[in-house]
Length: 302
Image (cartoon, rainbow, N blue to C red; front, side, top):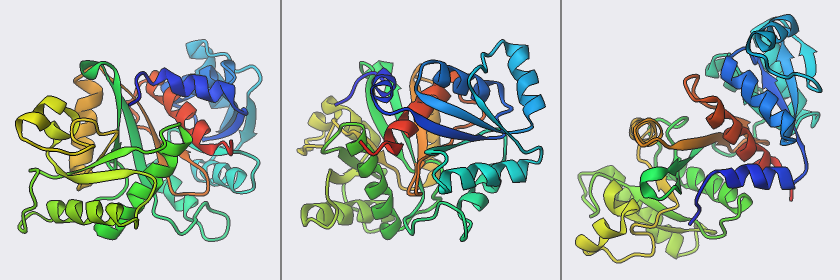
């Protein structure tokens, strides 16, 4: 069980310095996070967009842009395409979304000629550090990409997450497949998927992790709640990751964990050739910095 997301910064600093391509870094928090990540030696920042606008924003907020690389592309679409192409051509190791629409970024990522497609499902993983749980770190997927994943999509979401967990040092992540209740109910599809995923994991069809479910949220993260309900499972109350049934449930749980518990977070899109740092515009500079560190660790081959 992990505690304190600062381990991502330490792990990133200890590894090879990755090249980060940022499309349209005009937002205060995005630009500030990239400058701080560059200053700390986490990444080499490559800023793709209108350089005059970027430098003006840096001057307004006293951001140190010394040593950063600028690639001039005044149009948002062109800047996004250039950022993706730099990652595709291995000039950069990971991609970050700046002040540009997610749909524009994903269109470039999925380009058949020079995009970052792999054939795998794209999914979003967010790691939360929760003070109310002794700064315990819990992952959540997928609250950002897949709206209503079926069983096959949930397998893809898990496989992406497991690869990420292995990269950050968790050899056997405990994954709780969530539903509204902790018993299988034929009228609740999420509980049927959870049971199927549990069986697939036990039979070796999904490897590198331990899956159990269905779980209600309380008995996935609270050992006391699991004990009261008489649930015996290595995952009960100890989940490293919550697999949510829909994007709505994931987004709601994620917002509560981040904004109502005083928590911190880090999020990336997985399943592309390289990780994509994608956070909400409202996310803090710290969350964006931690997300850069997470993406850089995942991008590393070490």
